[in-house]
Image 1: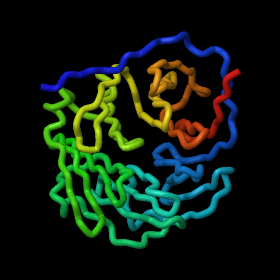
Image 2: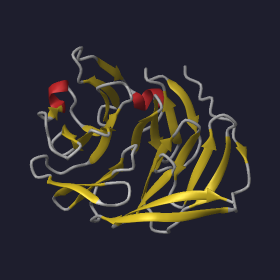
Image 3: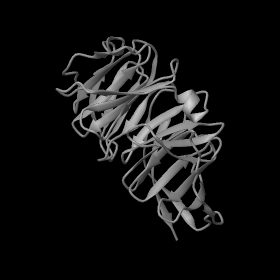
Image 4: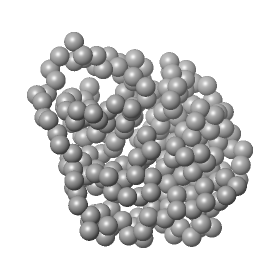
Length: 265
């Protein structure tokens, strides 16, 4: 029997003395997919093009995505590789730093995965988490020579959650978001570590010292050590997505990506 320990949160008043400072903004179409790597390079799709911008917003590379199909997500593996996932075709492909495909795409059906809805890069070398929503399973696939696999079965029953709208791995922990219940934190063996009791979370990010929970109207920043939190109003009322890389915060509206710093006074 699993006990949801939760985290002890010392709530403090909303931070009043802070300021968002916009650095750059990039355009993408309303159906575009995007992500950011550790150097602040921004990857996005515009219609049938894959594009890569550097940290100051200069377009570096542009490639057609026709051969890959409709892209559902893309994530940097490192600064030299990016993975693109097509839920429609149930495959993911690895591109180099110029957005050129240099290996055959991986067909998930060949790995006995029937309905993948998310593919997430792991910090473990050459490994990827695949979330199969239909069968309520997490798969850890390895592209290395060992071809090691790991499955976490029956997430719905184990975590008492119907489905997860967002899955990511940060600092060797898995974060699974159920917007109606909160954020489930698992270790790399698939064991439950915690349940963050915040409803309405859209996505999660983390660095070595803080967790960042993005909701539709605010960003919750939690200190991992003290468990204290602050609630920060978003810099724009039209924001629908969030990423963090280094000291920078990236927010996506319907047709733009905006890069900010957050300064406390």
